[in-house]
Image (cartoon, rainbow, N blue to C red; front, side, top):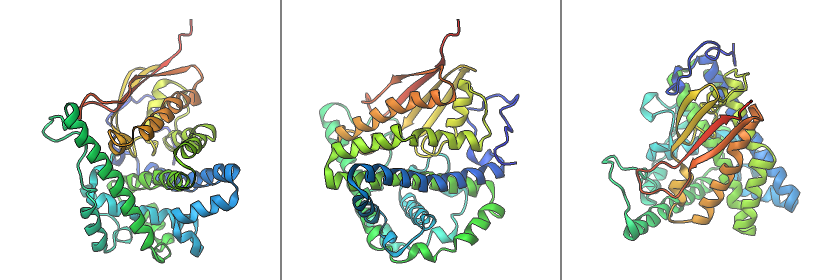
Length: 360
């Protein structure tokens, strides 16, 4: 049964629960909900842009972000094209994946066709730079010289990502419509094992979150940073995209309680949370928990390079994280225990405490 409370009732909270350890039906449900969330997020962005600047602008931004729309591609085809881009990008930057490893399962052939030209472009654009935290455990920056290195690294990641995305969009042709989506969905429902499904869900989470970057970039190009930031807050906070993201994990996992424990269980499989962030959960008791983000893609991309954009991303979290708790229970309070900037490359990105307000 999809969405059943298979571990909530009587089972202790497992902070190290792996995606591939979930029941197969739950993984299939997570995949489907995340695929549908891609369309919902794009629709939400379209509405926000259309309300602010008119439908013509919204259509133009969407067509620039997804050139296949000009050929009549369906929302499912657009999702699968984003999925193929993410598969290609993670082939050369595997640490984009957060809840799966590239080598835990074979990526379906439909998503990993020949892209020798793309691999060459990734290498030349320096997207293959590692995470901020080096394997040696030594800081990558100390003082001003380190800040310069951080600037160069962040600028390289951002420039490389944008170059790759533009090259992908320019070369799409009719790739999306060439995938037999019905056949692929049948294999998701019936054939793939749990480790493959977990890998597919991580790809899907990244593809879903890629949508915001495409809309943000299109608006910034036309109207500047302030306008793009205003609309991103509108989409994620005012129009409920952050709440919907949490509800994906909540509903797929069959969570019906309203404690802090239930909140952390929901976060464990919210695609915009664990699907793109390296997250650690610490449940102190049923109504007190801490969530630590060890790595954050926004921090990696913008730290020492675009502090205005980074501050904007953090502002969305500062507003959205408390709303997530209040969605389950208005008496759940949230406060940040640690926010950027980081002290050095070994430092965490941020830390959040959730606590049920004193009932006395």
